[in-house]
Length: 321
Image 1 (tube, rainbow, N blue to C red):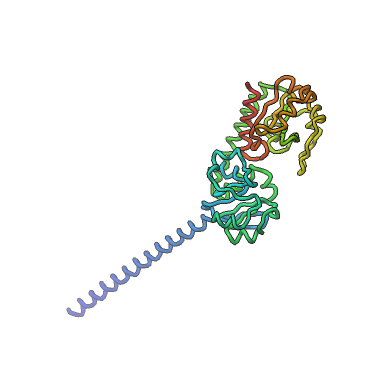
Image 2: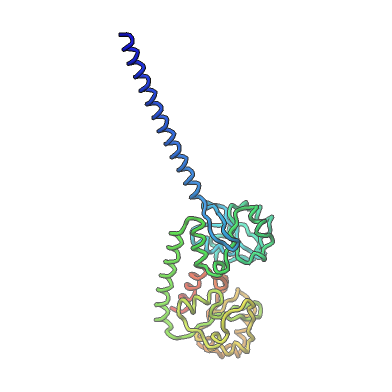
């Protein structure tokens, strides 16, 4: 009788032990699953992209970002950089409504200035030789992405690329689609307002005058996107070159544009020069009172989503009175 009870006790003990082992295995499986989840989460916080310097792995949750001269693309994604591009006291004025409180960082990215901002992501243009430090220098400070030339020169690709880096691809698509809609609406409005009339843009700085070629900065918005006609003088200039040469006052007399946007800071000498020039006053735009002075040329001398939107707003305000 005792042996039978002892056997039952042993069987019950073995069953209990087996249950504990199975339970423990289940807990290990849960822990493993949890660890795997954590690993997946860590993997999702990084992205590997092709860059000018080859494949590079970047954090997708960066909060302190430096992208000198390309703050436009960051802001289009709802991201504020930690510092803003500057040449001395000059900044991109058209972005100041969002960046006015940020510290400036010099255009050639001095290493000490970069270190002082404690960035966790640095985004550079393809022309890295223009920076004070080398790619390796910046990599020691924070993960660094160097754009390819086609990305540097195309703000849409910038927004798409920055969207991938920061896991904001939907926001990138939304921003670009909204811009397309803005262009389409503006194009229709302007077609009804000015028809086939021609438009030109001139930047006056000091007593020099620079005429925008069809693909120079935001003039591309005028001609390629809004479908506005350019005068013959601008057609003859061809594509914009790296070196932007001024035109003489005599040459400007050949500008048979129906409308002219004159970009000149308040008090710029060039404004008075044109007002007092019989040669200039004989041009169609001047004779008909269709010269529009814009005191902030910064969005016109840049390429970006926000720059382009502001250029469209300038054009609509002037030409649809």
